[in-house]
Length: 325
Image 1: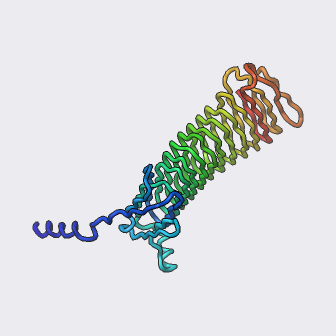
Image 2 (image 1 turned 90 degrees about the horizontal axis):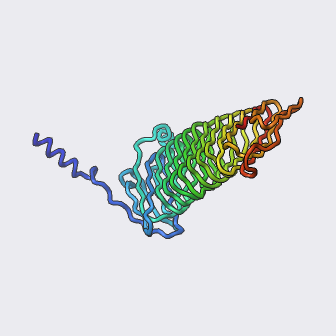
Image 3 (image 1 turned 45 degrees about the vertical axis):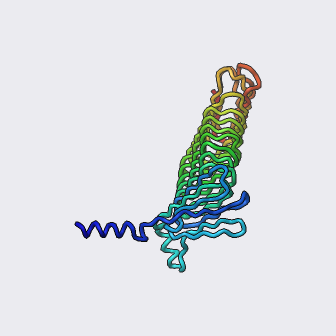
């Protein structure tokens, strides 16, 4: 028993169990973090008023750092042979845990696998991942994130966004004065309680936009697309995917569809101006409006009951039906 206890003490106080001290790096406003590695969990938390960075977890994971010409490089281990690189690409290996706190400066983070957490910050950030998750909370600086498979989550901030997700879940929540683009090929896309100007492009994803105020530009392929509590301007196009929009407040809609159904729900007594046309589909509107039918198309031009000027709806479709209620 005494032998086991003494052996445990030796292990606990051996160099293998000593945590390396954090690294303090003085930085200027125009400096930039460049982090590259194969597999890591990275957290960058901004502390207002700080003029330096504190970085921990590098030495334990075998990472290196240097500062050159205003660039703070944080670099993970690299294979020294083609065979070694192929092995690393097949198996991510142990995940490094890198924590960065301090000044808000621009950053670039490039990983094969991992998790990236960005907390606050007014400078631009770029993140690329093949597999993993990007979380950005409380940021006002621009964010560019590209993930092949995984998740992008942006919340409680503002500023410019350029988000690109091939497969997985993409969420924007509680954002104000946001501008930019969000693209999702396959998976789920959610925009919740957002104000600004946003272009949303989906190919096969299921998309839901709720409580949006501003200008919303939609490009949809085959996915199902739902928008609720929308106000401002909604414009765009859809291929085979169905589009369902529920409008509140003053809203203009301008939409083109190929074969997917377009459904628009208006408030009671909206006074909306309708301009609808489909070649091969059907049109369904309240009984107070007449549908014009010819051998070439069905169309509607008129105004619903209610105060004029608050809503305008224009929809053009080739094969799909149009429903306004």
